[in-house]
Length: 100
Image 1 (cartoon, rainbow, N blue to C red):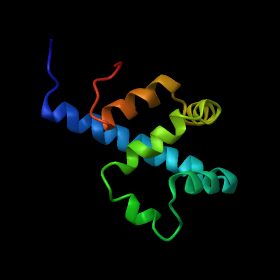
Image 2 (image 1 turned 45 degrees about the vertical axis):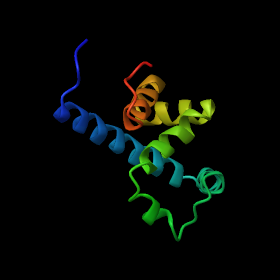
Image 3 (image 1 turned 135 degrees about the vertical axis):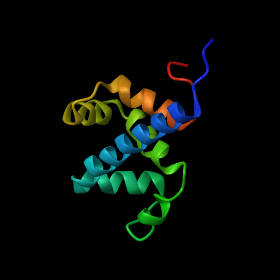
Image 4 (image 1 turned 45 degrees about the horizontal axis):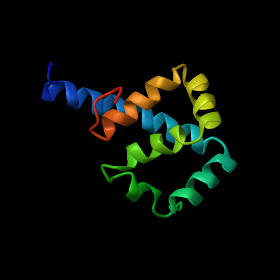
């Protein structure tokens, strides 16, 4: 089995974080979506920026989308991505090999 290089992991992480930033922008573009995200995560406008500094934050944003299939499908369509790409990005951010 081939092991991923550190450079590859770094690139995968950066791509996952970039997708999570897009997902957060998607959530923030609609007041109701953002309000629900904040309620579910326990975050608020005052601590959202600080939470984004936490390494697990990006995975939690994608995890939130993956847990809500209609929302995931809407985001994926708007972002021009397949839902599976979002799931793979989440797996990589969580340190799991993609597809497992």
